Length: 402
Ligand code: NAD
Image 1 (tube, rainbow, N blue to C red):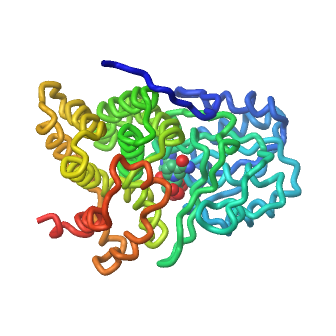
Image 2: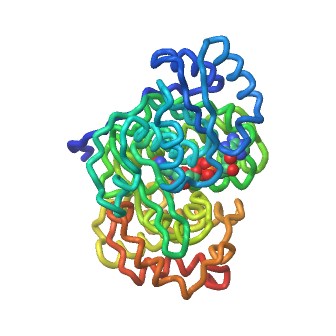
């Protein structure tokens, strides 16, 4: 029988969604003041028409701004340097406009600008892990990829990249952006590879939140809505239909994936994304995309063997019926269809094998040994080291699957 158990939903940003909503930015900024730090990526936004329009609007609204660029996935050293650079400047609000890297950098900077701390003081699993007490500078997140969902989450992911590096979060509910402006027009310039990687990141976040041990009725509803949007738009957009409809659906799915991940946590793909992204130069979305189908397969097999009553088995079957458009499938057939459809998606969008980023079988122990961070804890079943090893192994190179 349908039942709604107790749940809590942590703070969300005020959300402005829709084409052209970036035009609301100046009036939103004015509610905080008129001195702005803008954190953006390399050049895609600055070279766009949207920036030319925004620049005019900021100037006619008497808003002063300083621009800073975040070109790669941010490191703690970069965050501390940028905070140092702007700590003494009068800043009424921080606005990040870009992909997850710019958004996470902006989020961390907004959290530290009015404090005397280093981000290392708060990073999970690294350093003293002090309790973050703020204050935050009002932070407005404007994503240009779809996406990471960072515009709705309470964490900034920072990495120190090397074979002994790490990828960890600065996380606190106070870091949730005050406002998220989600404008699908800003996605127009996304190239194929970004559409694929980011789309798979959003799909992974939605699927992992749906089967998470911390999922609830509300996050389930959001997960299904987001997954339906991805089903209707991701491949078409990747294949060249850069329409408002496809971009809006993907921007929406990405936003929901961020809302959900902040509530439920994630799963084994993100558990592995931390060491893989820290040790090797592989973009976050590529890790998600390449592992998603095999992670679902390994979770399903493990639950069938050890926890046949685990509710996530039914949820995976629901996803199989949804993604294969066949509500009449029994659970067994639906599981098979799910894995088939996900593997097909990985092939269709040409998601790379891990060996393309230098990952080899001899690295497996090191990767598995660092995979049990916060995301792995909400995977629907506790995987053995052997199962985690198998999951990465299957995606190292094509022959591994033969
Ligand atoms: P990214 O921000 O690193 O951007 C990748 C590249 O795409 C950059 O060169 C950027 O300039 C370019 N780009 C961005 N928007 C573009 C556009 N519209 N057109 C053309 N080029 C564009 O990539 P990402 O995948 O968006 O973000 C990845 C980061 O987000 C990782 O560090 C990951 O860990 C993090 N992340 C954070 C959360 C969170 O909740 N905080 C969730 C998921 C991922």
